[in-house]
Amino acid sequence: MVRHGDRELIVEAVGLTKVFRDFWMRTKAVAVDHIDFHIEPGEIFGLLGPNGSGKSTTIKMILGLLHKTAGRLVVLGKNPSDVSIKRRIGFLPEESYLYRFLNARETLDYYGRLFQLDRNTRRRRTEELLEMVGLTAVAHRPIGEFSKGMTRRIGIAQALVNDPDFLILDEPTSGLDPIGTKQVKELLLELRARKKTILLSSHLLADVQDVCDRMVMLYGGTIQAKGTVDEMLKDSEHTVIETPRLKPETIARVEELIQSMEGVAIDSIREPRQRLEDVFMKMVEKARENKVATSGASEGGQTASFLKEETSGEVLIDSLVNEQVDVLKSKVAEAPEVESDQNVQDQVLETLSSPEPEKRSVTKPPPEAPKDVDHGMIEGLLSPDKGDEETEQS
Image (cartoon, rainbow, N blue to C red; front, side, top):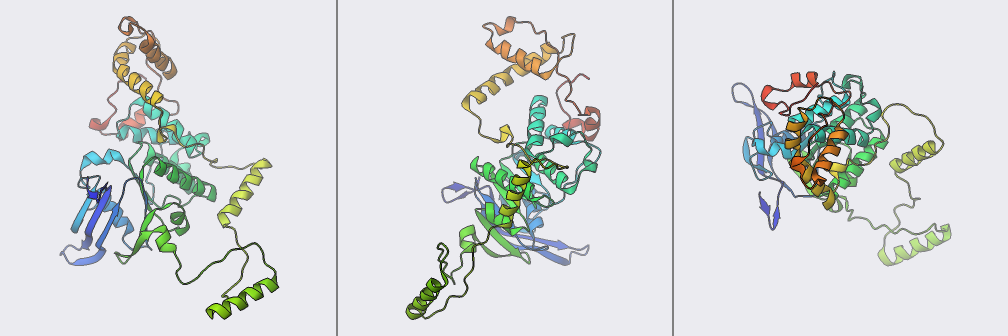
C-alpha cells in the first residue's frame, strides 16, 4: 500500500487526468484535469463540486470502471482494475440500479452471494441491515414499488453487506427525509470510529460539513480548494463574541469602546439561530411522544452488529463455529427431516461443547431457505461460476 509519511494511504492520485474523445480521437471533454489528492485510512473524505465538475468521473476511475488518460492512481495499494480489491469496497452510486422484481430481502441476499458470503452470514446481515435502515416492515415488497427514499435506504444497505474497508458514497442522502439523513450521518461517524475509510460525494454541503475530516472542491475538472473542514470554513475577516443576552445600552457602550480602540464599528447584532435540522428533529420527537401515526419507511434501528466492534468472545465463538460448518453440512445433508437454522446453530454449539465431538451423531437436518427469498430467481441472475457453492435443499 502507498505510504504518505508514516501512514499508509487508501487512495493516492497524482496528476490524475481523464479525457473523453470522439471516434476520430479528437478531444470532446477534459473531465478531470491533473488533480492531486490522497485519502488516509479511517477518515471521511469529501469530494465536492457542482454538476459536471468531475466528481463522478473520479469515482468511476477509483472503482476501475473508467481508465485514466494520464497520471497515477493507486487504490488499496493496487491498480483500480485489480479484481482482488473489489471485495474490500462498498459502493452506493448516485442512482441505485436495482432489480425491480426482487424484494428487499432477496436484493440483499443476491448481493451477499456476489461476495460469496455463506447462507447464515447472508441471512443474519440481511435482517440486521433491514432493521438498521428501517425497512423490515416492507421487506416483502418488490423494489419496484419503493419510493426514492426507500430505494436509497436499500442501496445503502447493499453497499454495507460485505462489511467493506473502503466505502464510496455518491449522494447518499439524496431522496432521504431529515430523519433518514440524520441517521446516515450518524452511521458514517460510527463507521469512522471503527476505522472505516469513506469517500463522500454530495451536493448537500451541510451534510459534508457535519461529517467530513478533509475535502477537495472541484470545478471544471480541477481542484479549486482543499483542506480540513476547519481550514475551509475559517473566516479570517471577522471576530465573533458570544455572550448572554445584553441590554441595548450595554451594546451601545461596547460599540463605543470598539470604535475608540479599533476604529471599526459593529457590523451586525443578531440573536442566535437554531439549525433547521434540530428544529425538525424536535418536532418529530414531540409527535412520536404524542403517538402520531405515520406511514412509509420507519426510523432505522441500531447499527448492524457486524458493522460494530466484536468482542473477543464473539470472535472466538464465530471462529469455532466456522471450523465445524463444513463437517456438519456433510452430516446434516443425510438427515431425514428439515427444521430451522437455529436448530443447526444449536447443533454446532452442542458439537463444539462435547468432549468427543467426532463421535456425536447429527440428527438435525439442513436449514430452511430464508423466508421471503426466492432462491430460484436469484440463481437465474447469478452466472454459473459465481453461484453459491453451498448445497441447498428446497
